[in-house]
Structure formats: structure tokens, C-alpha cells
Length: 307
Figure: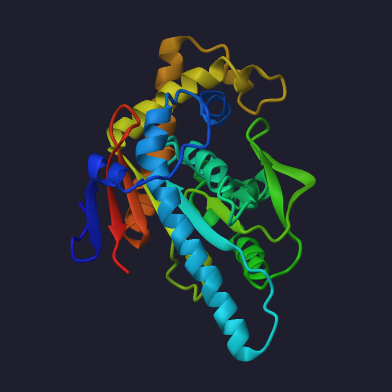
């Protein structure tokens, strides 16, 4: 439990009541396209957890937009369109990518901000060749494996109101940056930035990724549950992405179930679990909102940081 002097705790039912009259604007077929591998999130979860959140965010976005207008009126200038930036953090396999996709779909259905973009920090990992040269291939996902300068430049330009800002593209099939491919972000109303270490602060840096966030969310769960989800996902990927002949992990596709479990547990122990404990989990106290999951992936309680 986080410090009650800094966070307001809500049970699942208390949080769900804050939905008020917010309508459910997606259907089961929409949700099916947004779910991640091995996640069984349903419309009840969307109604109880996501709708109160989108209501809160809609109020925050409107207030921020009004503040920009007031500032421009005072200065007698035309201010550029500046996106409201939401950071989504959490461990590998905790479900933050699915969370971010559903949040994007719901926020885009509010009439006040129809353009909502989603960028993942995977695109700002150093290419594999550079990671290999730096001896970091076994620390992929750790803070030092990211081109943080490039990510900060992206956010700086975004918040400065540049009409087009580009981000690199990452492929989970080839497990690398796609050379020469970029995604363009063109002044959205809201940008969601999802990644492992988006709340990270460095010992020597004087500028952080989170400096550019208007709101941040940390998806939390017991490490044992996250480890089990990771192993389950590894097994599922053997039947899907790992079978792709272009997959970086195609050599895992033919493992037996027991061999696959052993490999996945080893990767968790040596890489993902360590990264969670050393770098990711310590950042959750910097989040505006912490959402805690149970072993069934359902949110059990929520903690909202006091203003």
C-alpha cells in the first residue's frame, strides 16, 4: 500500500462508482481486437475500471486545455496545439500494452479529444547491433538500453507544438528496430506513451521522460503473478510469433513444454525479474495513479495521487 498522505485509496467497487453516467462506447468485438495474448479482460472490467479513469482524464484534459487558452489570452498570442501526455508504466507481462490500447480506444470516443495516439518506448531501444557493441543484449529493457536522448527530443518537440514528430518503429518479430521505418505523430489531442521505464529517473540526468507527462499510470501486481503471466505468454508465443520464420526467437518454437517453462523462468530470473525489482517497481511512487491487479488480471484496487 502506498503512503496514504500522498495517495487516496479506492476499492474496486468504490472506484467503479466514480464512473457516474459515463457510457460504455466499445463492444465485445472491439475489445477482442485490443486484448493481449493470454488476457481475458471483459466488458465488466472496462466498465468498472476504465470508464471511471476516462471520466477523470477527460476532466483533466479539459482543464489543461482551458489553462492553455487562458494563458494565450493573457499573453495575446496564438499558442500551438500541445498534446496532453499520459505515461503508462509497469513490468513486462503485467498487461500495460493492452491497458494502453483500451485506454486509447475509449479516450478517442470522447468528443472533446477525438485524436489519441499511442507510442511505445520499444521504438527508442538502441538497435541490436549497438546493444551488442555495448554488451547490453542481456539487459534489453533496462534503462541503459534505451536511447533516452532521442526519446526526450521526441517529447520536447511534441510539447513544443511541432506539427509532425517522428518516432522509430520496433518489431517484436525480429526483436529489433526496423531500419528506416518511422511513425509520425501529428499534433494529437492526447498522446499515450507506454513503456517499462517511463517513470525512471537517473542519478546524473537533469531532464526526465516523466517531466513531459501530464498524468502517469503504473500497473502493479505481485511479482509471482507477473512471473506466471510471463511464462504463460512465452508458451503462447511458441504457437504464434515464434513460429514465424523471421522471428528472432524461432529456435524456441520447437521446445517441449517443460523446456519452454525452464527457459522462460530463466529469462525471468536473469532479466525481467531483476529489471522489475531494480528499476521498474521503485518508480511506482512517482505515478499519478497506481492500479493493482490480482492473479486473474482484474484490478483489485486503485490509488490516486493527491493534487
